[in-house]
Image (cartoon, rainbow, N blue to C red; front, side, top):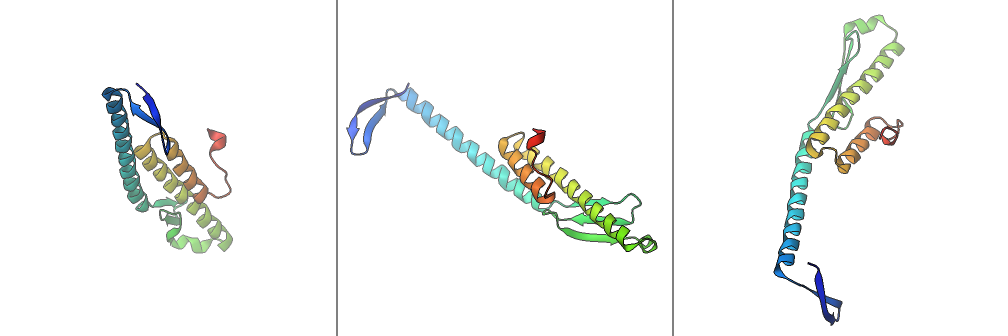
Length: 147
């Protein structure tokens, strides 16, 4: 049942609940909403801790370049096989860049999985995933075209 107007006061119209059942229902909805927000906050906190610990890794086809990136996509480890010395420096540089991009793609997959596990297909999950996509792969645009 909806509130019933019983008069007005200095702050405007004053409403009272027509019956206790309606008031109880409103209180239950507020409690459910509060519980839902608390659960989402806890999931967000857990997700944040999980994502801080993620690293992406990749190696090139002939395994002469191994790369690791941290949770922000920054290079944290680079290992080059001695066979690298037998190729032009420009080729090695290209391999490092391509392998770093592959490591970021690995990180992005992990982030997407963690976010989806925490929030499902919720709109906020997509916002987080899109933010990581634009951070890890600048210039590639958003996911809007794929929705």
